[in-house]
Image 1 (spheres, helix red, strand yellow):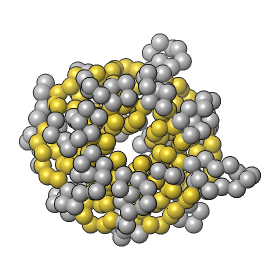
Image 2: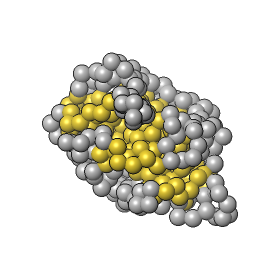
Image 3: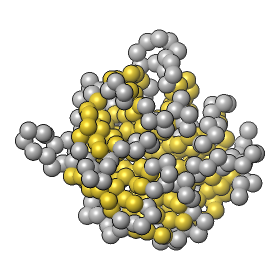
Length: 324
């Protein structure tokens, strides 16, 4: 099978530096963060910005949005975590994770993720653990729990499962950790990569997890079981074809496709059932730091649409041939 994805349009007002994160919301807007310190929300039809904030002094490195498209959570290079109301453009919560007291040591956040069920967010960073914080406006940032990985490895990415029962975290050494939120215990450790895992994404049914790594590969895990019964197993497919680091990945809403962005300046779309690349895009504007599928399921027969963020500061929309 081969698919064609067409360049629909670019954002009307590009960032001044690399787009380090982009997320397509259920309300058909796209939120993007950049190395220039800015966060913007764009209309997906016109590419025009609807809300934006004055740039932070340092780059913004992590972004998540809630399933209702109401809130965006983002994190700066030094660990300032903020909650942004997408309806009116107001910042409704800020937390300086790097500024804690002597009795409660600082644990600067690098990557953050919103609980899809509301109430909390997760962060990870230099400790190699996942910290659960309050996402409520009157107590934003307060620590609720610490989920220990048992390894002092830098946490590169973390992500709640869509059903809100687990959190996945990836490290700079290539491990992936799955935590159960109810018991606050480590469920599984996957050693699927030889180098840092830059991006992780869950399928919408919370059964599959795809990881993107500096070892130039993506790995698909079925988190329901470990096929060999040994610690660190669970990988059911490997996607190889990029010639440099894989920086970003996402799974389509219907669970059929994976999209990936790479430092090789290409975007690839992979078919999960055939374990093969079905589309490659080279006109991307440089290294592709972020990719995100349109969260609404595509029409029957359509491969859907996605958005990308690249080194040149542009957010780009792509649609499958035949998609509206």
